[in-house]
Amino acid sequence: MIDFSMYDFKEPEIMAYKCEKCGTLYYPAPMICGKCHSRRDPVSDAHWETFALKGPCTLLTWTRLWNLPEGYNKKYLLFGIVQFDNGLRASGRLETDNPVTGMPLVATVVSSDERPGKPVNVFVFKEAE
Amino acid sequence: MAKVGVVGIGHTKFGNLSEFDLGDIMAYAATDALEDAGFLEKRKEIDQVIVGNMASGLFCHQSAVASSVISKMDMEPVPAELVENGPASGASAIKIGYMAVASGMADIVLVIAGEVMRKVTGWTGTEYVATMLHPQAEYDMGLTLPGFGGMFTRMYMEKYGLTERDLALLAVKNHANGAKNKYAHIQAECTIEAIADGPEANVVNTYVAEPLRMYSTCPVSDGAAALLLVNMDSPKAKLFSKKPIRIAGIASATDTHCVHNRKDPLKLDAVRIAGEKAYAMAGLTPKDISFAELHDAFSILELAISEEVGFFERGKSFLAVRKGETEIDGRLPINTSGGLKSKGHPVGATGVSQAVELVRQLRGEAEEGRQVRDPKYGMAVNFGGFGNNVVAMIFAKE
Ligand SMILES: [Zn+2]
Image 1: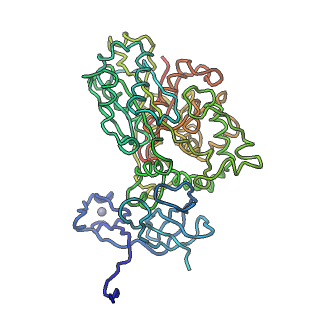
Image 2: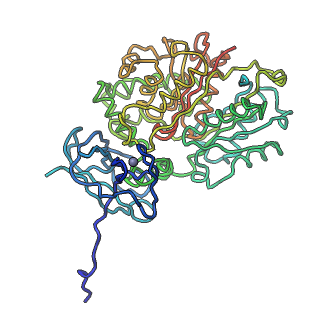
Image 3: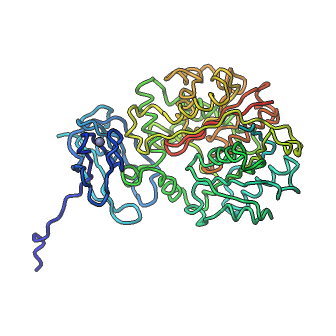
């Protein structure tokens, strides 16, 4: 018998960035800070703080998308744009029965292999409990 | 800077041309433009060919289309290069052609733009078009261009009181124009009863990306269009049979790749700035424009673009549509060709197709029933990405 518990499964995460020099937040990652012009080295991320973007957020707008692209076998998917308390915004999937602009949500991340190619990390915005 | 004019136009019918080769379609439209200019036999005297295309590598598994077109037209050794700027590739090709003439490097430039999208299924095509989104923050999420169209529409509705019926009115108007346009993909009128008011409307006009419905979304089209440009100050301008239509202003601007990173996601800054630059170049204001072709890949964009380029106050354009102000006989006709909704949207071809419509209207060559009365200036806006790379053009009759 194999003991799977020995493997450390890493929760999927989507990272946001903070310029250490001036404190400006970014998602997705920039290559130059728009405020202080600091460069980001994508190998080392030196002088940039990274943190997982997740948790409480507010729904800004949404759609129920029919005619999904290649890879998706669902009838439709909901998508939305949310804003976090730190001012960052993100686009992603929406999982709620009755979406209303302005509703509080919680941003989670799942690994998705629906599209052709290797699995990718996807935001799923869910109703706050 | 040299004055640049259009002396030849060409256009295939838009529609399902998936049985044909992309290069053949482009060459056909370009040959039309050369014939229109009376320059077919002298085509090797053209200084430069600029080809606009968005995604032949994906849709047709073909690269280096500029070389293909040149060879099909027996135009070697004329220089030819490809310009790609998503769905604004066509207008960008015109802008680069303009720059070639204005710089003095070329006197005669042939601009050819085309796209064949229907060799693949709609399922795959939607996926290919989505590759213009931010690769991780948008594309990976499963989002598509209609998805952003839907989310933008909802924001606009909730802020300004636009209704789904208002969007349907745009479809009725644009189909009425497209029905009379020999180049249009869908040459059929539609009624407000069929797509909004009648009992079967929800079935006829189903949701694509709520609150956007099918009749608020352009079809997937194939096709090509072409323009022959000339330095109007050069003695070569006299070589052509047609009087030039002058490009009075042409400019582009960019915006954030991610839609969610715009300070106000309802503002299309790239449209506003491209428009302002084109007006400044032409020495004109929105009041001078006689008619316009605006990139209505989703009907909401016709409204939002018409506000960003100063035709209407923010949040007020749909009130003008209700009053018929943008119909063919209205104060400011918009999408006289049928727009992307009815004429179709072969992505890379659209900007040049819009320019062909400006020339046809300014020459007085549009079909009966959709010719604007005595137009002086026509404007077109070609919208790349979801507004992250936009080109505005103003053409003048002189
Ligand atoms: Zn900084």
